[in-house]
Length: 389
Image 1 (cartoon, helix red, strand yellow):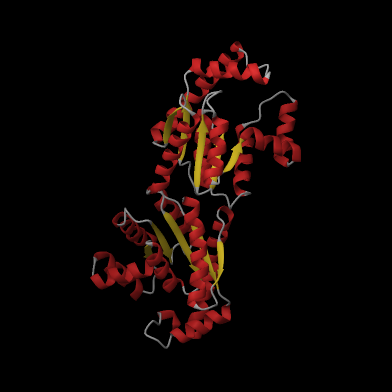
Image 2 (image 1 turned 135 degrees about the vertical axis):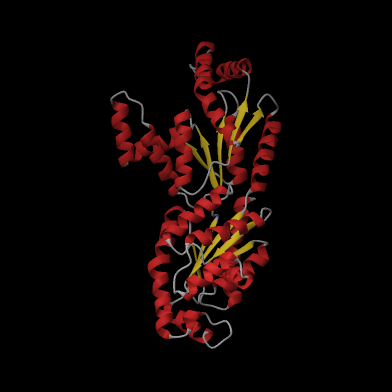
């Protein structure tokens, strides 16, 4: 997902550049004025609240605006990203947007500011006034608008300068040159993006073999908590000894140990194109941990895939596996297999439901041959690559 805020004083040419960004990167355009008018026209609950405030001569609160923005984002889960125009307008709204992005498990990637000196803006707007007939395109009104923009916007720009995702573009150039510089800035940001996938599925759904094949095909790092724990045991490391003790005592390995292993894996793979996580997160707590780990590395989950296999087929597969060298401890009896499947239902399904609230979870039929399932999963992943192009 690519999220951009576009800034510029009146007369900077934001409209032209907005059209370019929307078309080039397939972004959904969010103008606070437009989406507020839509809520008013449709007389939604938020629209009626805003209408009541406006009728009393008041300003629509940030609380209502942020709810409308959140609603708009959630209602467009297939968007490659969002282009914000007119938000955030104030220092307070900058913090609001940051919080909203965290809640939605994404972030504002870039704030582009088209910078034009005051006199150039005045000249452009006066010229526009001669042809448009707009009453507000007179010098007094223009200078007041520019002064208001400067006073309100400077703290917002300083906020994002400190965060390091601010890019100034010289707006006193030919339109094509401005567009070219914006495109370079966005493409540079896209180069930093990883493709991070979480692969869900019940035991026996084929996550392990599919995850490894996907990692190899798309040059991603395969992250299997089970494999990492086994590796620590085989190395005889201090962590491995703790894990072995947990296993021998019939205890679950603590999240503290798993976090250390995932953190180390990510640090060792700084130049990775992305990661595919198998077997993690298994619980709601772990889902929040993973979000935090990725955010620490300036990354997010881009794709969630759930392999859908019917229960009887899962039992059959696990029973067959119990007779091979690949048998897992829980494959040893039907009772253990059923218990493992119940654990998945009780602990992991709520995680998938949580992600469905903020992501477009791709449910892939995993009942067919490995080759057919791999084709379906590959198609889902390649759609995500296109979103990052």
